[in-house]
Image (cartoon, rainbow, N blue to C red; front, side, top):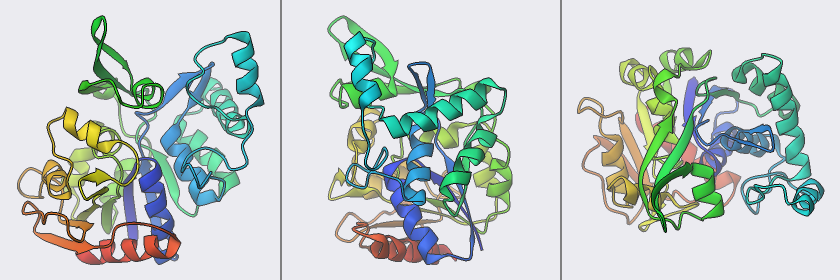
Length: 313
């Protein structure tokens, strides 16, 4: 079976660990969000791609869910001693090696999909990891400041300000001119099932679907599309998806997120939806399943992956 997953960072990566465990002999392709990408200290940083790569490759800091395990911060400390901003984005020494290699290869003219494949050779994630696009796309947030409304990079709002500045809207800068990276549309068209894991629906899955051609491919493919709620009891399991949902006028509950994606045939993309037992039952999707969505360990993530794929296959 060919499984294609549209994924963001921590929640998507943890689900992918379970999916790989549940379907070890199947072909899994991951289309990763790159709208979180940012240039820092002259380096190209791809947080969501790296979180997937490190998690599946066994190098992730499992306590944080992002960054490298056993990390040190000598370079960051030295940058601070020089007063060389920005310092709010924590770049560890091991992690810096990835960004240095990525930036060098990009500067040599290689596209991001080829660079990602080269980086994955070390980590052997057991899936094919593709960026959603090779083009530069950045999520910016319009927020309230003391000086009035202003736009800032998503990472600055998310990491430096901890999403505390009221957000009015999200803009995917560069999205209109972006094209899907090599292999992305083929992965969708040739898939037997497409999965939306419990990634942030606004700033992780949203940018992927906004790349011209990707949403259309998802709608056109005969493969069923099934999603997993990352909201449990009105709160996101990880991160601050509730703040992002509020900014676009969507309530932070599983049924509302399902309605946000919409049902296939009614202008949306979902054929199935998996959500936490006890949360409101979605009425906008024809096939739904209430179960345990918390991924405490690999076994729990694998069971969630099995019931998710099994709902529509």
